[in-house]
Image 1: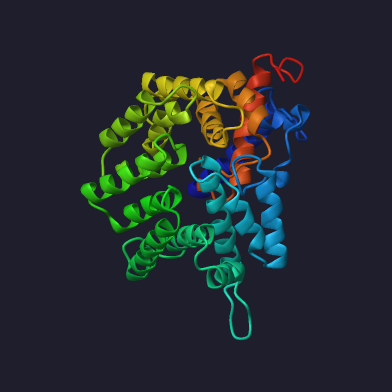
Image 2: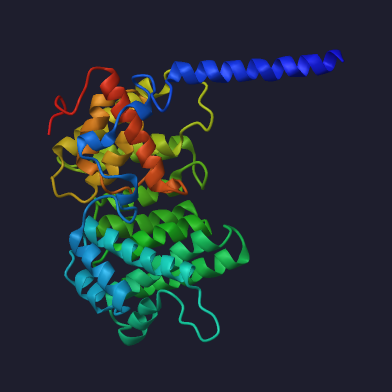
Length: 372
């Protein structure tokens, strides 16, 4: 009988504590100032969560128009023409190759095909069949195979290795079709990671990229993955690679932000150190990335990648006003780290955005005080 009374008491205590908690946070939906739910991101002109574009990190209207056309008509020629007119050594070509490959991969996942059914992404297969000498189509096909391997197979398994070997051959074919284009070799960086290239093999591949596009930010980000501890290198090797890239970065290059990406790749799974995000290593990396975006060309397509990662670190470091400054530039697109690691990138981004708004307002900020 005593046990029964103890259980009843515990239930009643839990009920009382729940009510107190609700009152402290506010009744009927009201919450304390500074709580994420107390601030409305819409007051700052931010897009609603359901309006956030998860396909890319920043705007590229030409790409969006062509993607919509290709997926609606299943005619690859718009993609072919867009890539043919995109500078080979620039960052945007690499992003567009990734986008087209990702679209075809997603279509195939949504419509795998069956008896009497056409599988998704058929336009890419037609592209390769009708224009086998087209360098753009070959690069997209190679990237498509890489994405298929990582998304549909288990690393180390036979099917994963088979797809990766096919991707490696596709990279070689794409490179032959466009000798000066770094993109096929950048695609192969993911193959190097998947197949476990030796350090010598990797460095030979990396030299081919440096010969064609020595300051390519996308290539450096892909190469960083190889050096990360979870693949073939160590934390020290990854930091060394990132810091060396930042040190030799020409004026206006976003390579100065590389250390921040290295820090992100090696964040502790359970952070037991108080103030980790205000620590010297994080603060130094954040300052380098802030300097990079402030000095880079306004039209640099890699700016959005850096700004998205800055939002993550600035919010974690409770640097609310600086986080809001970044959000004002990138809001609307969330196809970048760290959000893409989540099953719902838009929701993950929206949480950090709400935290930034709440922290900003809790410290006296408002829509009127935020620089435009």
